[in-house]
Length: 358
Ligand code: NAD
Ligand code: GLY
Image 1 (cartoon, rainbow, N blue to C red):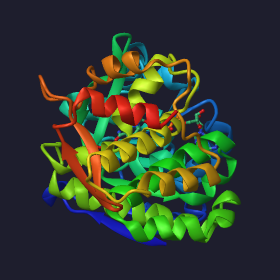
Image 2 (cartoon, rainbow, N blue to C red):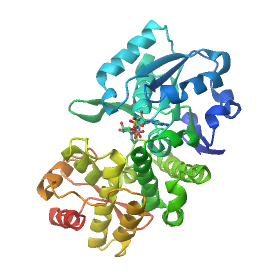
Image 3 (cartoon, rainbow, N blue to C red):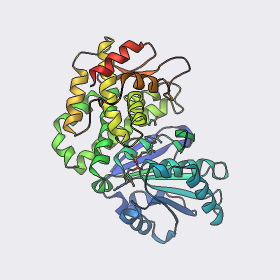
Image 4 (cartoon, rainbow, N blue to C red):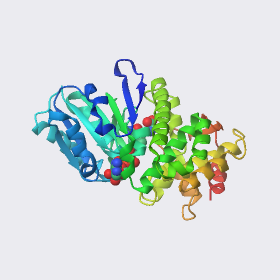
């Protein structure tokens, strides 16, 4: 098992990464406070892991709040339902919420924890690769509104993250691969060795080798830990975690969030952002091709589909949440492993990068 510290002063916490951790509570049970517990999970994850977590908690008898599955459930209605559930169960400020699931459960449970009685403790048990390498770490919590995703939320750090890579064996193939895109992202923005490792280990990645996953999740969390410790509230460097996301969000939005998983759209977005970086003379020619080759070996999409017009994509990118008013802020690469926050790309350059990614 690996232990990575998220260093945030009084709000510091450990992330534990290992195999079969849900079955080995000795590693984490001592870190769970002796207070009333409420597990948040969903109808897909509950039959797989809820009993294991409850028995690992011994005689603790947690309450359980089980939502239907899906991104649509990260809603205001469910947020309200969750608060009413806590009220009905007499949950007080001393309680602790446990999020067992992917990023949807983690984000919703985290936001409930952030706001219930002005903030109570919560612990993440992420069960998707995306949640283990990204969503469960760093304290961004949110729900969606009909007007847009993640529009309502708070920064609220968990007090512990337990990432059991054995839970990744039951993930749908596409969900697993979408998570790999986020791992590759850390390589692209901070860690060229990680890209080399992934290139060498494509076969082991494709069979979800546990030892390799412990290594990749741990390395990803170390990168996230370092970024979050430097810039918890995204005043600067944390924005580099959005590499590929401006193009990716536009692709997701223009396909009604139905054709691509988030990580798949980010995979295409990373190729587009790398083309733009090359074109701007920031990074070596061939960088985009190298990333695209690896993404393809991991069965991820790397081209912008023909039915999404360049005009619509550009227009949609103008709406990106990361943009400071009046500028189009993009994360580009100065080199493989070195991200750069850019506000100088002109529309025609972005247009050319999109066309290059067809
Ligand atoms: P998700 O939570 O919807 O999980 C994907 C699917 O896998 C769901 O059907 C889920 O029920 C299922 N699942 C979860 N664990 C499983 C397991 N072990 N075995 C089988 N099936 C399992 O999606 P996600 O990709 O984990 O997270 C996406 C969400 O995370 C989005 O809402 C996004 O906004 C959010 N997010 C948040 C942050 C953050 O920093 N807070 C970062 C990235 C993404
Ligand atoms: N997922 C991007 C961040 O946590 O900042």
